[in-house]
Amino acid sequence: MKRKQVAIIVETMNAYGQGIIRGIWRALQEHPSSVIFYEERTLDTPPPIWLKNWKGDGIIVRDRSGKSCRLALQTHAKVVDLGENRHFGIPTVLTDHAACSRLAAGHLKSCGLRNFAFVGIKNRPFSDKRRDAFLQEVDHCHVFELKDNEHALSSWGTNHSAFIRWLKKLPQPIGIMGCYDLAGVRVLQSCNVAGIGVPDSVAVIGVNNDELQCSMTTPSMSSVIQNQERVGYEACYLLHRLMDGREMPETPLVVPPLGVVARRSTDILVIPDRLVVRALNLIREYACDGLTIDLIAQQLNVSRRTLERRFFASLGKNPHEEIVNSQLKRACELLMMSRLTLANVAKQVGFNSVSYFTQLFTRRFGVSPNDFRREKRL
Picture (tube, rainbow, N blue to C red):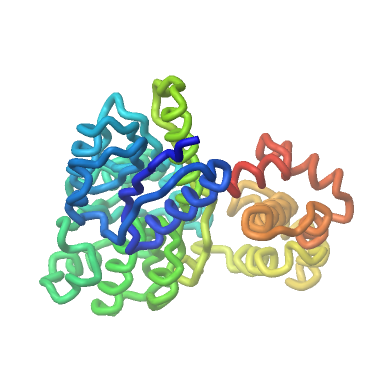
């Protein structure tokens, strides 16, 4: 049987593109009859010189300008597009930009923040979509959009005085979402130059969860975890369906993000009642270790009734709800990032009964823990 020849025109020089390629590799384990062609490239690398005369069967393409995609469409190969400048009528797999913004906004809100800002990049579709979705989630949002050549670390030596002046005028404390990690890095670096405290005055969250970029900042940066491996997996799966002669889907496939990794850049709780802040800190640290409302009250030297009343006045929920939220949040992380059995996950987050944990998880998220793991790990 003749092997299918597949070209991968995806950037290899950043964590997002590398994640896509890992997902493609996983899907290819189910299609061992394929031969892959790819090369090192960035998102801005011109189309491969061999593409114009290429005689292969399928192409997965992602580039910023759309030139590589347009050239791929001129071949006789089947094409799946992953680029932000969507070519209508072409099978497409996309990140759920709105969901990324909802997660970022929800994380900043959970810190007690009431002032918000968004830092994006001018004339970039993904940034526009994340900006618009973020604006829908928060009130009174300030927006600054960097020029397309100002966001990268390589341009740090350029004039950034206007951006710093904007940061200094923002109300504090404030939560800022960067349209992706490098924009968040730019915020953190500018705050450092301007003497603005992070996270006490400004809390920052990015998107991509690039481990190197998020860890190299001062302080380390919180970020939304995109599921780029699933983007690559689904793109490869879709391409093989097309090469097998199956119909093209009518709408793009949209892949949701996995969650948020909280780091020091958002380690802030803006709540006037310091008793509630202390209770929240205890919950964050010990929720999975058998923590109860009575234990919190005892640790803080107040009555259970006083604790519950003040907690509800500040957050609109009782301490037990927050304990369970923290347990389930940790369970999600373990299900996504580890290979622990369901029984061990339940035990690690503080549930002695697997059936009760499963029931509670399913009621909260609408899917069982096992289904959640299968969906998120793709």
